[in-house]
Length: 73
Ligand SMILES: [Zn+2]
Figure 1: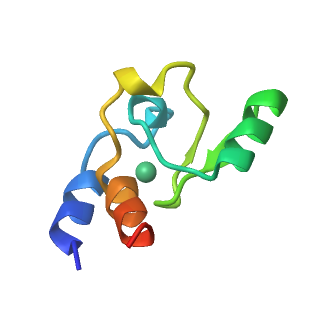
Figure 2: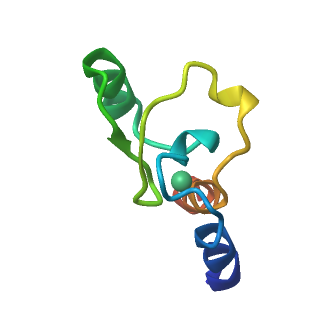
């Protein structure tokens, strides 16, 4: 388990509306729906975030990356 990394991630000062500073992973259909409706989408890590126009410029959420890697096995 990646408890240490998760704890580190949660310690980041990103709680108040700062979620958009990380590129989270979410299901593509949910991302599309969220973009169209201008709503937040729930990431794999459980964070609610607004889809970013260019997520490739953002640092990837460590928790989401671990979860996505686990899924792809
Ligand atoms: Zn995430």
